Image 1 (cartoon, rainbow, N blue to C red):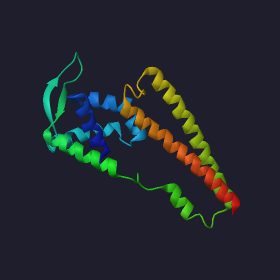
Image 2 (cartoon, rainbow, N blue to C red):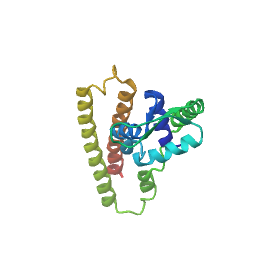
Image 3 (tube, rainbow, N blue to C red):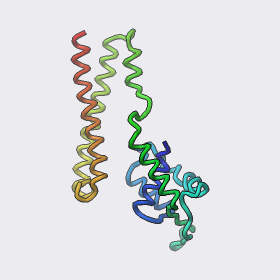
Image 4 (tube, rainbow, N blue to C red):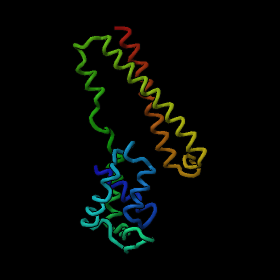
Length: 183
């Protein structure tokens, strides 16, 4: 699953022709490096690969003021098909990848119970901080108007998903504390 491709093709599909700097700026503003693991520095390299694969094409080169020339790209029909495939892959991927916490728990049998409890407490504290950060981000996003379901329902849904995931992790910690307290 190439998330960098999904970001670029998705931005071009949503916003139309763009040059690499515009794509990079939009990815930076969306903070895809933080929540999607997409390094904005890799976008230009991926653009060359997408063009070589015929998924995007150059439509013009432009220069604004003294800035360097920039190539503007658009989706090809093949790019639209690839975007559909990538979206299907993203929607069907249920496991995000390796789960370090599960590995810790499965192989924690010989660990000191106090040490394990301290590690889990640190994680829970970090999740509480993350929940507070998300609440602050939500308030800011709603105030600025970009996290309102009426303005951007998919962005609001994505943000809500992050909140639900943190809440679920905190609920799991509560269950785990009771389980470990009972043993």
